[in-house]
Image (cartoon, one colour):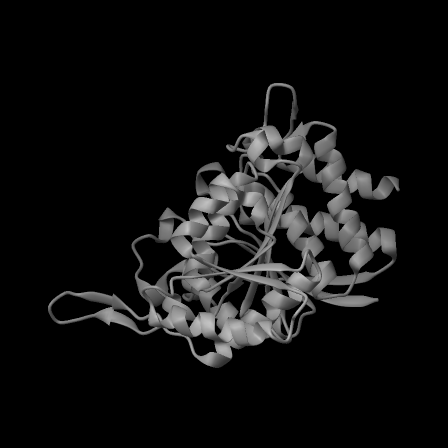
Length: 355
């Protein structure tokens, strides 16, 4: 099969970890006899430097002609002096909007060999942790009306309509049907009108999925429960801002933010990226963890290309390397073998070749 892939390395460690993902993509191409045409595009700070905008039209056009998109990371102190629409992060928000990527899937998995890296006690994690956060991605406070009044008061409007809630709720229930058929909808309906509408629509959608157990939880309680009893969760369904916060909290439970991938999906396109930032302080030092970017490529194979076997092979290779005690700096312990970014990529690629 032939596929077109756009890679947007972005800023900071984005280039290193994106190249790691590309190496694994090429290894899958070789192993399974596919044809992956890979093209590169600018987004974020590098796009500002090269094109004067965080999201050039050329990048949008390339993404719309692709079968899958890999993103590294955007932003850094170099562009901190910029405001609003000029900032690197605006490129990420805009590409989500341009491609209609309203669903963000963020798995939070504690791998058995990394249990000791988790800040939680082993008895809290239990036999293992496998949560999927389904976050609405193109609505809510990040995309609402915003501004500064004449008196200096700043405001950001949080709003959702029924269509936006219904379509993400459907994605949440569909995800739950493929897992353990349990979904926790997180809102703040005791305070926010938008959350009351959220809960109403989620309940309506739930009637089409009688096999799925639906629970509701306020966001402040959900944040606490993730720390004291995380294994109660299977799928967490929530709005944009709450999902942004909770998914980062869940990522640290797993031991390192450098381990977790994400998928941003719409009706037609899919964009895949690690959940971590650009980490400019370690860029170019060959110490960044490439696993989140590599697992993002695995999600791309599964969700955008229907290549389930290939995606599973990447996940298996990562797990086997971890089982052998191979670690980058962020997940290193005294009993492990410390490797750099490039060596970790090579070892994972070797696993895929060896089967």
